[in-house]
Image 1 (cartoon, rainbow, N blue to C red):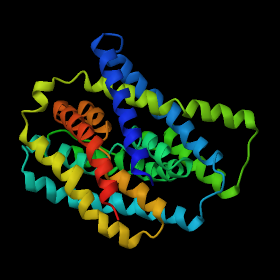
Image 2 (tube, rainbow, N blue to C red):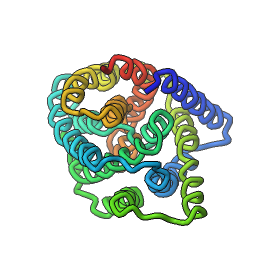
Image 3 (tube, rainbow, N blue to C red):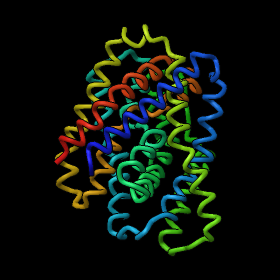
Length: 307
């Protein structure tokens, strides 16, 4: 992997985020656009990008590597929740926000930022791998994730089985089926899916920028818990996992995908969940802002340090 390619892509994504920020401040975009745009990406363009990733593969990845990605994803969403539980106790947030911080340790922005970065740096094979990880992400997020985010609060939540059957999940499984059975489609179909999926990177960054524009910047920098959390999540955890991942993952591409996923900032889903379950959504919004800003530095640094 070329670090210069990664840095250049992050600069491009950062500038697009700034573009979305400016558009919101100029009243061209608003909260309604952010909400509907997010749904459009999650339910439309991102699933298309997942399908496109497997259709555009010049040579299908080895089945052993695909199995490795699946095992890595399951391990990630099994081990990190346990670690996150103890890390949350360590920073000692208020009772009402215990579950929110625990949730944010586990669920990173593997979609909105992960897909565009992986596509730019590694190509469609990496996006295909990200689709596998995204399956486990969604299954975890809408099952035990709901229970975790309500920990330590008066709110109650149960697994949302309806959201487990989402376009993203369906298309991720469809991509696996296309890969397994080597299914081919007419060029016009592949080009259509590729064009729709290609909307994802720019639009997702615009929405992130527009969303960040709705946050009161002054309030972002007055919460010590957010700083402590961000340092642990964006720096300490990836550094701790790095030697373990290198030891267990032999394929360089699978290792690179895993490390970039671990370096991703907090998922926008945390803001949606805190709103749905009537928690203090400002905690999630501030943390998304800080970790997203930090990731523009920690992602390239992390990949430089990664052996």
